[in-house]
Amino acid sequence: MRYYLNGSSLIIRGQFRICSSGTDGGVRNSTALINHQVVENFSHNPTKEIERLAYSFGFSPESTSGLLTAVDMRSLCILMSDSLTTFVTAGVKHMDPEKFGGVIDKTEVGTINIILVTNEPLSDQGLVDAIITATEAKSLALKDAGYSCFGTPTDAVITATENPGCEQYAGSATKIGRRIHESVSYGVSEALRRWSGVIVRKLPSLFIWSSIGGDHWVEWQKKNCRYYPCHFKGQRCDLCYCPLYPCGDLSLGDWLLKPDGSSIWNCSRCTLNHDPRVVSHFIHNPEASIEELKAVFLKPSP
Image 1: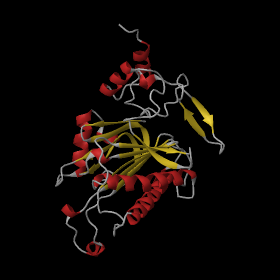
Image 2: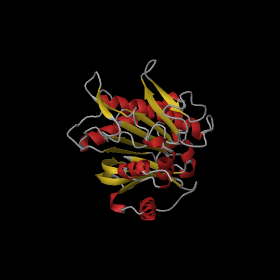
Image 3: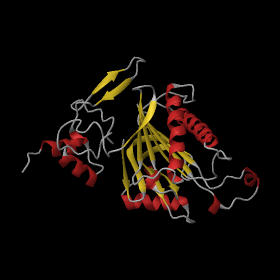
Image 4: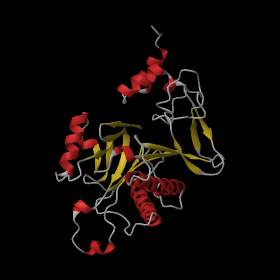
């Protein structure tokens, strides 16, 4: 998986099996997932807009799945927990439950978009189950935040796996389901705080699930990092918490066995994405392959 921002669009690339509740929804294969910010009073055909976006980025519309939102991408929350990466944008304007029984003016509503990407071997049934778990967690987050609704009419979820398999269940009692519940409930809460202005960030927020000092979420911020320099003097930290993770390249890291029998990618010995030349190349070429980045790293300095 590779993710990056291009203008007002979050783009996630990879070889995915997905289940989407978006306008171009369903279960299918996909190579590009998009969460795109539209204007406040957007009224065009959503499917045509996603198709237009796919063409503009050079993607195949047939293998592109997209979500639309009026929420600024600066309030995007990205949460990483082992094999799961969660992307959330959230805005809620409609708070009167009585209006759900009548005609809803769409200019009054917000949108909560959630994209889940994992390498767990989920089947098509498991991908559908993951949407249910994500929706339950979103509703709980809204309730805990004091909202009188459990969602908006335009909410959407995409679940994606890079490793399609036979796992049929992703309910909150399963291991992957617990991770989904934790990341979505926390991510929706934090995304709403940024959308409402309670927390102001100039860039999307990145959260890491840490077990150090007790299980909790940690927001990584480049400013005043107490670990700098974690690798070498003169390093660039733009890509700290690497967007390539887990790359699986054994020349850069290793798979470690956890006590519960699962594996986790350990890249503590990798300095690839801290090399200033590699960082510059990656920022200008966000879809560069690992081999391309390694070639930049190994190229002799002029």
